[in-house]
Length: 263
Image 1 (cartoon, rainbow, N blue to C red):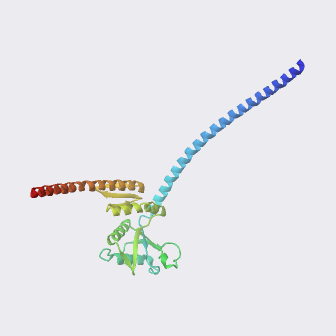
Image 2: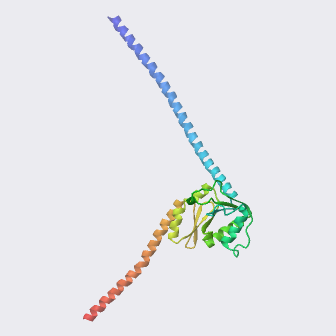
Image 3: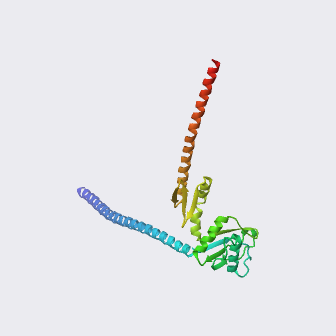
C-alpha cells in the first residue's frame, strides 16, 4: 500500500515539475515578447517622428515648387470673356490692340511688349454658357503687367464687342485656391467698409484706424472681424448713453415746469 502511495506521489511530483518547466518556458517567452513589443514601440515611435519630418519637408518643398512656378508667371496675366476667334491668326498683335481699345490711347499710348500670348490649351466649347477659353499673356517686362492690372482696377468695367472682359494675374491653381479661401472674409470686410488687399502669396492686408494688419489665414481674419464688430458695437452703445441722459434731463425740466404752472 505504501509503495502504491509513493508511486502516486512520484506521479504528482513529475506533474508539478512539468508544470514548473512549462511556466518557466512561458515566463521566458513572455519576457522575450515584452522585449520585442518594447523594441517595436521604440521603432514605431522613431518611424512616426521620421514621417512627421518627411511630411514637413514635403510640405516645404511643395511650397517652394509652387513659389518657383508662380515667380515664373510673374509677368503673366489672364484675359477672360474675350470671344473665340476674335484674335485671328496674330494673337500677340491682337492682344496689344485689345489692351489699347480697353483702356484708351490716352492711358495706354502704345501696346506693351508681349513675349507670348495664346488661348489656354483645349478646343473651344460648343456650349455658349461655358464661355470662351482664357487668353494667357506673358509680357517681356514685369512693370507692364503691373501697369495693365492697375489700369484694369481703375477702369473697373472693360468692354469688348459687348462682352465684359476681366483681367487677372496668372497664378497656379494651388495659389488661387489659397486666395479663394479668403472670399467670405473679404465680403465681410466690404460690408464693414474696411479697406483690404491681397498680397503675395496669399496674405490679407487690412487697413483700419491708420494701422495695417496682416493675416495669413482666413481664421485669423475672422477673429479680427469678430473683435472689431464687438468693439464698434460697444462704441455705438457708449455714444447713445449721453443722448438718453440728455432726453431724461429735458423730460424732468418739462415735468417741473408743468408743476410750477399748475401751482
